Amino acid sequence: MEMLRDVPCPSCSKPLYQTGPVDFAASIFGGADEVPQIVVHKQGDFLRCRHCSMFVQMNRDPSPATGQGLEIHPSRRFLAKIPGEEQ
Image: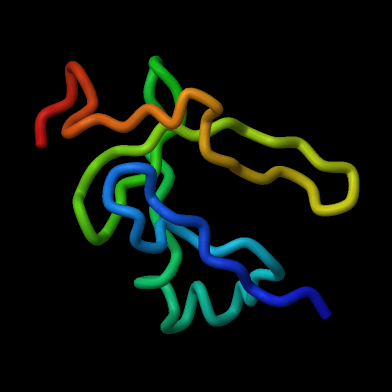
């Protein structure tokens, strides 16, 4: 089985999310704090870092083997807030 791997936030270098197999039952019934929420915006998809609160731009990464996934956008762009959104 594939091991989980931390993907660091481009802003603070602390773990932004983990790659690897996802236990959906754990994410729904108790491990939800470990699964970052995807923010869908007209400027793209973002994950909010739970450590530094920056919004990190993400790319949708379709994969035939695993279905839909996300990866950090090649620009490694992050924002303090998403323009046009009230925080």
